[in-house]
Length: 104
Image 1 (cartoon, rainbow, N blue to C red):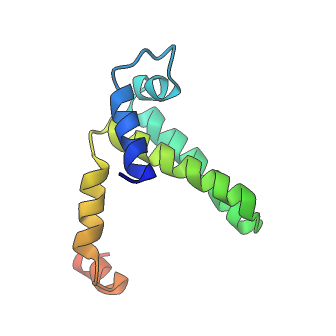
Image 2: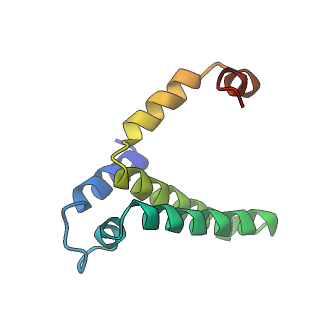
């Protein structure tokens, strides 16, 4: 199991934890909309680090983005496995062709 899979499993386990003892449980208790908002905040911070060419901060913020993405997915009962399966389905398809197939 890789670190991302371990993190997803930990987040899943924290769904039933006491929000007073777990940051993840606290986020999940706030609901999917709050989890999505926190993910958005972290994404903006990662974007700002990228624009500033701050490699160390971008690395830190990217880790936060991945964590908060997994929390947001968990809040909506979407597993990392489902996301990975979607990526596997797209593998070998050009981004242009994939977007055209979705009508975007």
